Length: 144
Image 1 (cartoon, rainbow, N blue to C red):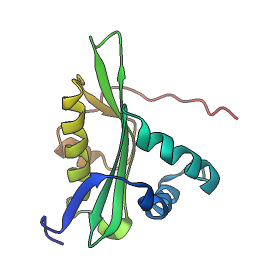
Image 2 (image 1 turned 60 degrees about the vertical axis):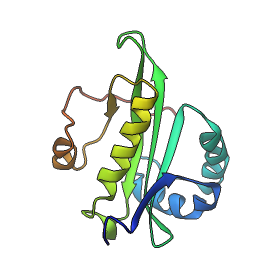
Image 3 (image 1 turned 120 degrees about the horizontal axis):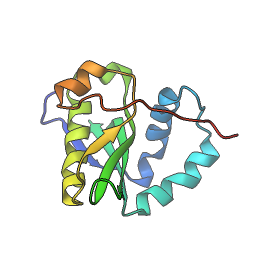
């Protein structure tokens, strides 16, 4: 793959099968269910504060990123949050993750976000190489 082969674009409804397959690989605690995915996808695509990006090579989706911009009180305005970022295992280390994050950062800047953040334990070297730093401990409580 060359940089010319990679297209980062907004995901579309027609990308549903490919994105769902990647989301299944992403899930550790939760197992994505198709009915819930199909209900959420149109709402996310229509949400002005959400961005779902697809990394496409040769007409096929090899990765995606889902993120949001939301207002805060402490940061004097909006911040951006990457909720999910996934690149197909055979397509990693080819620049897709970097390209997805860079496009998300451009979108976040256009929305006047003060910073981009995410919670992950995966690939710390990758995020550090892109200028991200560890800034907090992540706590969660699963509600069932």
